[in-house]
Amino acid sequence: MPADIFGDAPPRPPGGKKEQTATAKANAKQSVIVLARVRAVVNDPAIYALAAQLPEKEAGSPGRPADFPLYIYLLYNALTAVFQSARATEAHLADPTYWSLVREGVAQCLDQAAADALPETGPTRNQWLYNRKKLVDHLPALLDAFRERALAQALSQGLLDPNAPRSWSAPGQTQLVVGDGTIPKSPTKAQKPTSIDERTGELRHHRVDPGAGLHSEGGDENTKVWGPKFVFLSSRSPHYHERVVLDLRYQRPRHPGGEAALAVDSAVRLAGFAPGMLGVVWDGALRGVHRNSLAKAGLLAINKQHRGAKPEKITALRGPACYHDLYAADGRVTERTLTEDGTAEYRPIPVTRVERRESSDSCRWYHVLAIPCYRGVTHIHRVRLDQNEEDTKRAFNTAEHLRQIPPGTATFDRLYGHRPDSESLNALLDTTWRHKRIIAYGADRQTLAVLAFAQTQNAIARHCYLRRTATDQQLRSAA
Image (cartoon, rainbow, N blue to C red; front, side, top):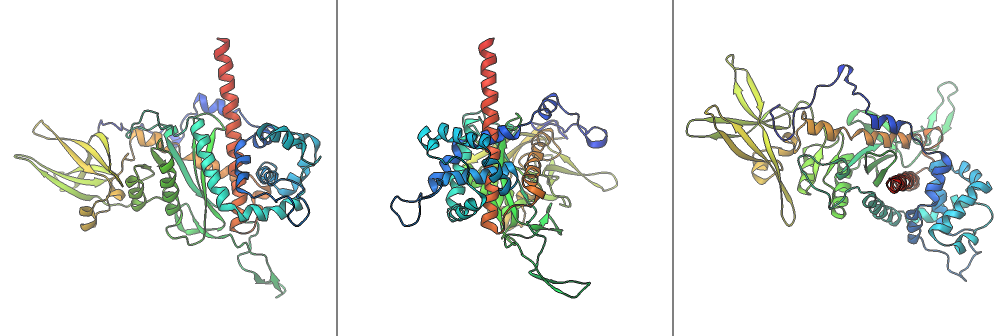
């Protein structure tokens, strides 16, 4: 690689494994016990703020008075992601120790009168199932409120800071969002309502999950997984347990554009509210058309280059006594030369600057190249990185062949190294429920269950952030 602003990627150590840093070793020793997780959830103001989307039963209306206010059922829903099931949540909230934690949280986030008005024990599973219908009825409003509160939390924790210094060629971890799609296990393996027992010939009936479907895994259309699929966006600081889930989307089977279309829609929407967001880190699901949409929205797209893309000619620069044949190869601009035996070689051209030019409705991106010439001079040339009409006419997929931050560079390796954080979030989702199966049937109820998971993760992030900053403040005061 040439000596440019992105740098050359260091060689990987033997075996492909990098040495664990001191920060990673220290983080690995930390954990949040169940009691602290419960306290984090019940003391999170965001969950009570979501309850504003739910209409309470009016006094004097027909029917008996409600046993609990609706925000309690939002708390119950979130706690199912702590205790792994609704039955276990009922059992824990029947215990005076855990119910007292709930009352303390209500007193802190609302007022003491609201806490005193609660019954002496928590709601039952049947009460929650009955009132879950009301939560599902207002699910779109709950999701919108969750996104708004999650972004506010991220900003309060120093993530996506609009006032932070910007470098489009070397953004920081807290200026990026990481995303991925994941498929939790359905509560049932059955894909058809009936089957024939091969041994007895008996007709068997099965409950089929209407929210599940066959989804490709890892972008491989030949590998299909049965279950509901969700797409997440999150951001985090280097500190342990301080990741904030910013968005979640249910992906229905055969969704137009699949995971990548949802990813682009979610990221562009988020960027409209978060000017401090510089880019998106994703896996191979994003292709040129998706990267182009993100670029037009003013965002960096950081994901691996797809294999098999052949070098494509960009242009030829002709000088008085020189000729430079520019090609797109391996995600960047190269110069094509021929060896003595006629073999084509593609030498990467140094990039001196990444330019982002913003207009009223779109953004344009350029690499400023320093093309070395055998005449002893350097030619400065700009190459556009997003699709324009000229590229479309000549059938050149610009964003498929040219990358804002090219793979194989030190900068790309550093930024793409944040992508496993999305796999970490997926692994946590898999272990959230008992037997690793989502505790609901149907898309809406499953989305509500995943919302509980996201609320719990954000509540823990807030808890750990407040604890860390309080400790840092004490250390500064002692010094």
